[in-house]
Length: 408
Image (tube, rainbow, N blue to C red; front, side, top):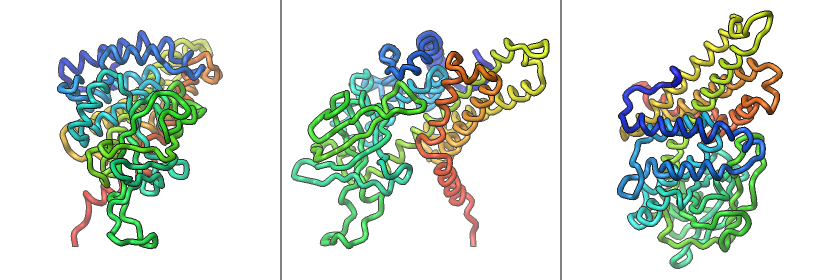
């Protein structure tokens, strides 16, 4: 086991789970990741293995058939999986966010209906906020849900839906009419975002095209990296959703629900950054001991040792911040500051560590025969996933001003 990125204070159960996931990553993911990634092939066999391990139910309470583990356990598992292939961690991330939203906010009927099947991986979750004309500006969404008797009619277009094709349950954020004063006209200023958004639980068939009346998943978006996992659009055109599929049974609460889920997502992205960075360091330090220049391994050149020292320090620092953010959430405390810091630092450091490992490989780093080429294309996604670095800085800055507000 690597000396880097160790976590103190874990229980025997946590250590056993992590050892199992680490072994699975080494034996089932790493040997095939680059080949599957180059073909942009969905890792069906790996996903079935994750189901067998029970990882789709890792954070789902035991009463619903899950393992009932903490966010920290989940984040450490994500770190190990991302070390093998980041796309695989993306397959389970949106699933966990939807399961978390159901656990925290779902009605008893919604929990009973979905969580046991989600724990088994029979129902696969995805969630959707972004739209083509906006990214991190959630308040500007235009997709809309309008009440029509016992149903809601949803219209709009969503973007960057991870697992859009393979998922069977999508949590979709839409604008709704809550907060609009009675008797208001179209000229009336719209209500604040936190009072006018609702999360709808949309069940669908897996696949592409028209997956249920009023709902179309056009196809996979071709990406630079983050391959294997399907990233899609979602088009709603008169999509009818029963009123009992409003998350929590009450409209107008979607903004708060989704923001809570995003905190889980940001810890996840931080964990992915830690895993990719650790793998890049492993590749860099291994290659540096094999490659010879000027009569000795390049690892004996001071310039390379400096790079390795910087890379290892960044791996260690990012891991510590990620663990802190997860533990803060597990304790029941607000963790948006810590999650924002961890996501920002881990993604930036991941990019830097991967680039240094790429430089250590020299010309071979540019070859598809070497694993570092894949990591070099994967790392940039972490800079924008779950909010860009600039969004994280805004969150961090605002929270710091709240915490350190001067008096008088």
